[in-house]
Amino acid sequence: MLCFVSPQVAPAAFDAMDSYLVLLLRIPVLCYLASFVIGGDTDPGSLSSADGVYNSSFTPSNLPWNTYNYCNAPHVNAKHYSLPANASHPKLVYMNAVIRHHKRSPDNLYPEENELNSVPWDCSDFSQFSYGGSGSHVFHETTSPSWHPFLSQIWTGSCDTGQLTKGGFDDATAHGKDFWSVYGRKLGFLTSVNEKDIFIRTSTETRTFQVASGFLTGMDPATTARSFPVTTQPSPIDSIVPSYSCPAADAIRDAYQSVPAWTDHLDANADLKARLDATLGTANRSDWASWYDHFFDTFTSRTCHGHPLPCNSTGACVSEADAAKVVAIGDWEYNYIWNAADNAMAYNQLTFGVFIQELAQNFKLFRSGGDPYKLRFYVGHDGSMIRLAALLGLGKVSPLRWPAMGSEIVMEVWQTKQDEKFVRVIHEGTPVSGLEWIPLDTFISSLESQVPAHIFELCNGS
Image (cartoon, rainbow, N blue to C red; front, side):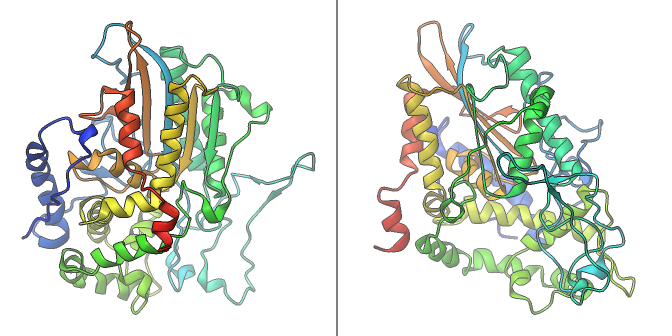
């Protein structure tokens, strides 16, 4: 078995240790992941183990609280939060936080979706409100008429594709409650939930601003009785997804997904792919063949909601062992595309540089005393979180995994008694090694170093 190890190292400002040591630390974990994906010599385990939880929003009590849980990522909470140990009695003075939305129905559909769902997708317990200004508070309900000629392409039930579920909303509410337990009750940094202190931006996807709503409710249940502004960018140029066009970045990614470091894992798992195709009817479909993203999505969306893995009309089912192999492959693919591949950082910089520029501007505005907000809070997607983690350098100590539902990165600014300011980065509730105490100026410079000059021209070859 060949373990692929990228020679890339973290930006100089983020290096907390000698790059050679970083590389050595990464090798065992990269090999461990690769053993699932390429070597096939390691049992990927079940869908609930110390390696990860994929079948419940609640991590089993016999596992550490910060075990990777794809259904509901660990996050900051009062019980496990600790103050920085780098200074005596520092004061929290500013923060930015970015999370992924919480759990939803599948975003991808099998060719014969209807026959592969023994349990309906029921969203009747979560009203979808959407109304304008002073108009009536209308909400929509999704129905799939039994007479519809294309019914075979969608499941039975009242959920649309990619729709936040009641379970996802509840997780977002619990997430907000835990967030407040730290930054409201424990630290007193936020004294109330109000639009003067808190700025919120989401993508244009409905599920992201619904998550913002649940999060606010968890922070302060009284917010349900009032309106709260959420900012979005125009969908064609939204930087948080990201959704702006960048042909140059597409070409970079196409190149490193055309070499053996990538194609070998597809060849090595041909038997798995054949089994899945036979059960799910996905053979000869390019979007299901180029990577395991669609399989990962359709399996984990089900298991996170307590649904069984799909079975077809002949009674053939996806096994838990194959599903566990798929999620291991998904982790490997995400780490390769956004972290380990040659030129992955160039791809991230082009596709996420605009959002990194926004973060840099936020911290510069705070440094100058011009930011009116205490907290800038963002709700994005898995693509947002993986790029942010990679560009902050999190993937240089250990491989990155597929960002879980509710995945969280918090960037705190602390002020010492000497009026010095430092940034601490917290990922999934745990301070990041090497990013526990970065001078604010250094942190800003590091963000700016990830933003290509003339990014529009670079993206479009002009």
